[in-house]
Amino acid sequence: MNPTDTKIKSLQQIRNFLLDMDGTLYLGDRVLAGSREFLNALRSRGKRVLLLTNNSSRSVSGYVRKLADMDLPVAAEEIFTSTLATILHLRRKGKERLFVLATPDVEREFTDAGFVLTDQQPDDVVLCFDKTLTYEKLRTACRLILQGAGFVASHPDVVCPTEDLPIPDCGSMIQLITTATGKEPEIIGKPYQMMIDSALAKLQATAESTAMIGDRLNTDMEMGFRAGLTTILVLTGEATVRDVASAPRRPDYVVESVADLIDQI
Ligand SMILES: [Mg+2]
Image (cartoon, rainbow, N blue to C red; front, side):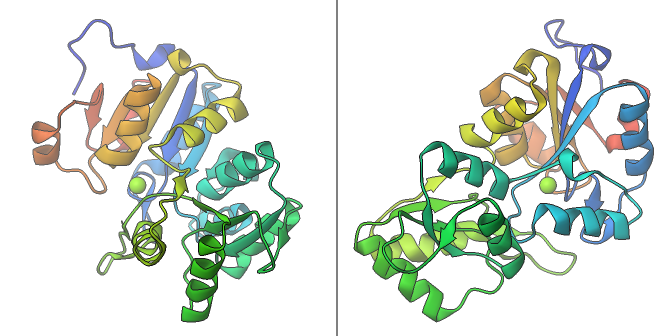
């Protein structure tokens, strides 16, 4: 579907493309038709690409491996996770000591970035999509927050879609800790400002020259709306045509899949 509003930019004018991954380029472990061709077309036309994900259960190198295994080769510099945005944010605020709830792969990302991971008087408790969460970690996190540590969460998604059923994600874990402590976290990932600000900074891009492509209205499109990006919704993941019809705001472009964009960029 092409836009009718003349204020909407043609995609040929767009220099930078932020792409969601799950539901946009692949579903679980299955590459969506046209994803490879679309990425190749972006690169061959000199567009800059950054793959954005809220899913903080995997490190950047973990994503490089996952994509390579799906024969979707992507460089580490082309991937930006909510974990990276969280790390940039904590660094900027001068935080050094953290109690992190995350998978071992993502814990390593924090130590590689120079943080000390500790349960002894940390500055902040940082919650990621911890698929290795235990009751012991939860109890420690709640104790530290009640003793005055800050509380930061990588992203707000309540569930993560899988090919089977949705599974509990970071947002559900936030609710557990908030219920137990009465403290709300600072949240970093899509649709919040920190994620888009740091993604645009990484690309040295302006909102006017950038488009956001994704499958979710309440994160991908919402972040694009708030930041003034050109917004492109694909129907290969979460959002359906019916969701678009009832949404308070319509994305600039709505397409079946990224394959439909190849001739427009
Ligand atoms: Mg998605």
